[in-house]
Length: 332
Ligand SMILES: Cc1cc2nc3c(=O)[nH]c(=O)nc-3n(C[C@H](O)[C@H](O)[C@H](O)COP(=O)(O)OP(=O)(O)OC[C@H]3O[C@@H](n4cnc5c(N)ncnc54)[C@H](O)[C@@H]3O)c2cc1C
Image (cartoon, rainbow, N blue to C red; front, top):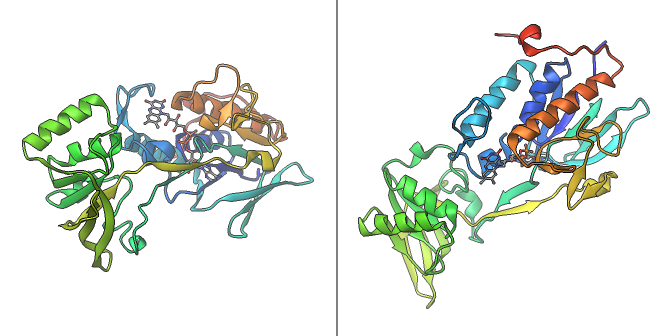
């Protein structure tokens, strides 16, 4: 007897580990994310930052952790649905769910595991005409491959940690101009000190107070960016890339519309089983709450494992606890 897939909502680190945890118990997974790639906060917010509290990794960057998690999930052949949003979770008579996606597609699920973390985040886009023509080719809101900018002209816009960190990082291999609408930066003090050194040494050109005003180029390739200062004077800066770091808009999932109990926007679950107030709907990771919950990746991994085991125990199929060393994984 086969078991219908579990629909995992959210392909952050916890959603990815859920695929492994379910897979080890013989449960296939569909994974849905509104973003166009897996990784959640690790990829969207800090791909190049080292994480120090993942067991057995003294240090691992957000990007590398996600690569490892995808590799760990791969033997269980998850089916990913990117750039899709869940609209409705409809309980079925047999105890499963019909999961309705934004594009009319529906998925049959034996259970639903919600791993929506901090919510759906989208980068704040500067309101520039025809910006979409350059996004993904000359304009990026997060960096996954710093080598792309080697020996290129890069214009970075913003005054927070991301803008400062990337200006400093890329200044070792690219021609970097940093613009900000104010004279003051919000980045950490030590980054601001390093920035002053880099400006003094001529590694970064600073332009303040300037804002983005227009784009020039064709076929997805930027040629120049127009900037306007606080006196409305416009200047044109030639550049190959524009990296706007203006923060993120975050939208929480409509848990209450799905009939789920929430506390301060997070799902209330039983940590022993991962179950919400609706039997068959589970939660793990940053989107859940219970007494003394820690918003850490390793905590989310354990929650995903608890949920996977309870899903199997209540599936009507035989359940047996086994260590991975006994069960093994295909391909190893
Ligand atoms: C700067 C920074 C540094 C951090 N450092 C550490 C650290 O050192 N150690 C540590 O343990 N933790 C750290 N964290 C926290 C850690 O990133 C989170 O605990 C972790 O990402 C939670 O994983 P998750 O899978 O639950 O959620 P997320 O990573 O938030 O992923 C959720 C995914 O769900 C998707 N999603 C949301 N809503 C929907 C929807 N309705 N439909 C479909 N998809 C949806 C999102 O697009 C996203 O991809 C840090 C966080 C930040 C911001």
